[in-house]
Every structure is written in structure tokens, then in C-alpha cells.
Image (cartoon, rainbow, N blue to C red; front, side, top):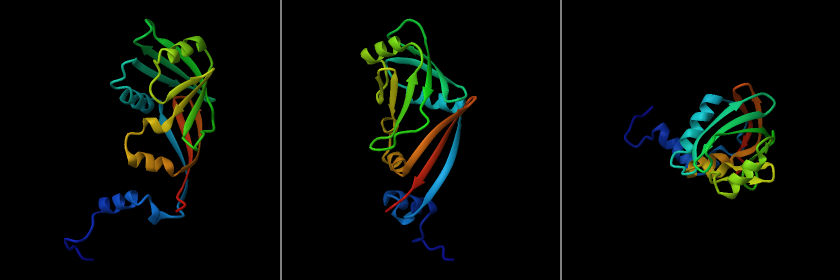
Length: 172
């Protein structure tokens, strides 16, 4: 094995694969289950809300059977709001990945929040259904390329845990 100065690093090889839209991995197929703890989800939400002028904080408590409690404090309402939602198991992947949740309580407050544009970018309320545009939360082109490889996704919950069952494939 040569260690000449023209040899590439592993990072350079991986970056080339990403830059070429994973064409070198044509035919790859992966089924993966990704458990995400409630603590990690709250940490991600906190980071995503930095600089948001409308939401002071948002904490989730994950229950079983795709039920989640969301405790939100907005700058436009004097009291914290506790929302109960039910997450649809199937995620709409195309044309834009969307997670759908059903608002089980405080529907009027949800509608007011939507009307006053208190919801973050990428989150819309249609009747009692909240639709989250996953792509709107991605910051880099690399993250978007990874998302494009997702062919299907389902969401399940256990106490304090969200589980993503994801099918990934590359068909060049």
C-alpha cells in the first residue's frame, strides 16, 4: 500500500460520493429503524427554535400509540399552551416529505396561532391537522441529498421514544 501525497483521505472519498449524489452506490437498499429519545428531540427543537421571534420554548413528552404532548410558550399568548397530538404513522415522502399530526385539543388556539403566524416556518395548520414540511428544517444541501434517498418512512412511539422506520435506496 502506497502512502504517496496523491492518496485521498477517507473523508475526501466520502465527500466525492456525496457530491456525486451517491451514484457510486447505485443499487444500495437499506431498511433501518432509528429510535430517538425524547431528550434528543427536545434538544433538536430547542436548537431549531433559536432566533424564532414567536416561540419562547417548546417541549415534547412522547407517549405510546403515537401520542405526544407538546408544551409551547409563544410571545403572542400570555400562558403556556399544552397541545395533545396524534402522529400519523405514515409519512408523505413525495413530492415534499411531510409529517402529519392530528391536533386532539386546543384546536381554536392552534387556529389562532396559525392566523397570527406564530407557527414556525414549515409548519402549517389545516383544520385540525398540522403538517410539518421536513425539508424546511434542513439547512445544508448535503442534508437534503440524504433526505432524497428516503423512499418511505413510518413513525411509531413508545414511552419517551420516537421510532422512525426508514427505507433508503439509491437508484441511479
